[in-house]
Length: 421
Image 1: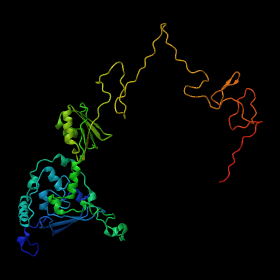
Image 2: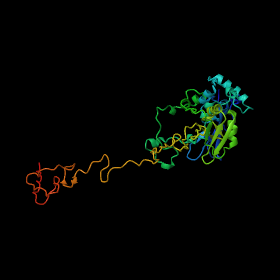
Image 3: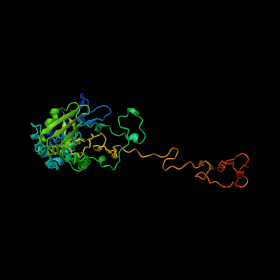
Image 4: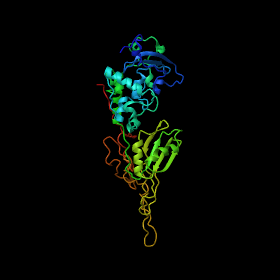
């Protein structure tokens, strides 16, 4: 097909002309007063190879310029953004969305069949804003899509490209460089080899394969063993989610006994009348509950520690649960007093050790001999006996000195002399 502007009007009648692009919130940026450049028939569509109107803009400060890559007809057929080719409703690649909805792509890839298919789809989409093909006939979103859907823009995708001169150490612009001064990722990383057509047709897209692996390993909410627990914890409410919003969301799973909202912690506790209703609500809303644009966190509640319905034994008193402990404290042990004797008096306490005696298990001081009425007697200090040669005997009634101690009238002990080696 000729794409020259000087060709006849028959070849140009299928060229696309548009006034506004079809973009997601991430590619559009956070600036509401954005300025775009429009070029009519500026480039060929990367999918159907038809000339279309190209839009170019800057999403924000310190971000790279972006432009539309595919025509609006191909965008409407898949309900995707013209720039990033992600789904407009869930913010996911088409391969992940089609896998969750069990859709099979039947779009032709040949030149002639693709041109005819595009013309027929363009006629169907002239007065219809809903997606065409099998996507428009698909059922409601699955739990997998609701759990993986992106609810907030991901502006990190709009960052500028890496400066190749900075990587080589030759960039002289400094902070004025419009490119990013970061090291590139591993060239063997599959995410560094992305293709526009693979993402559109959902064929071996590395980003989609990574998300599918994350979905396969996604944790599940296990019900507690205590069958009396029928309460669910709902976190991340904020200031916009009210009691009526929670009741409208959870009433479909069964009768609700109570909804208690704690504003300081931005959470709520939803109590059902039956355990089956609570299990159904936890299974259907775990990692997939979104109310007023906020993704809420679902967990099982905890049982009450001091249950009055629990059976008790004997006169033991009940002790309430203490925060931080795994369960209820055991009741205190009451030791009964000793029985009285025949006269009605209680026996006295057992006698303690004699005055001055060491407690049980402790020996007397090893350097202090025991003194008796007739003088020192052998004890655990040191044995009594004749004094060594050259030492005067101690006076009567005095114990001999310990080794190493010099006393008057005795020869000094020998000193050790050390000679240098």
